Image (cartoon, rainbow, N blue to C red; front, side, top):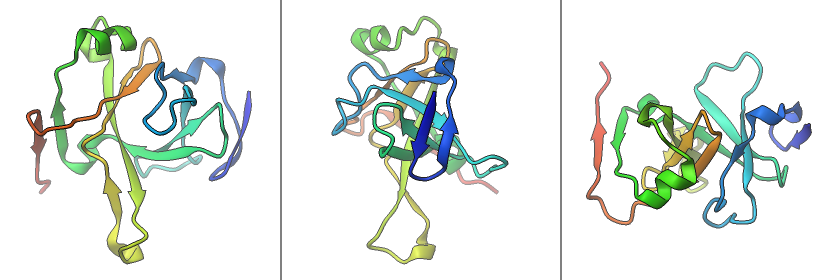
Amino acid sequence: MKIESPVLGAVEISDDKVIEFPQGLPGFEQLRRFVFIHEEGGESGVFLLQSVDDANIAFSVTGPERLGITYELPLSDAEVAALELSRPEDAVVAIIVRKDDKVPANAGLRANFMAPLLINIGARRGLQKIIDKVSYDIILRVRG
């Protein structure tokens, strides 16, 4: 299928790359199908989580490890079922990042560490886990 991404223009998407978010994302519950895309030759580690259902919606995402973060998150039975997760190693975590209009352009990106995306790469299923209290282990590591 072809998507007209507002960021990358016309992009051809293979059906087997689509990730289903059964509940959508908070604020975008009606959008349930997304795909990770990036600019050809781009090696920045920041991808677009592009909606297949509404081409105007795309989120910049990156792996938390690129920001020096490690997550250890317990999942409820309902979350495991929604992800169709049978092996922990099939789960990956992504963080939504964005530029903040209120800070100088050279200040970098803001990352939403309190609502990571959890994705079962084998089943192509995802969810956004809202952390309402900091009782989880979020480990910050300084890179040398």
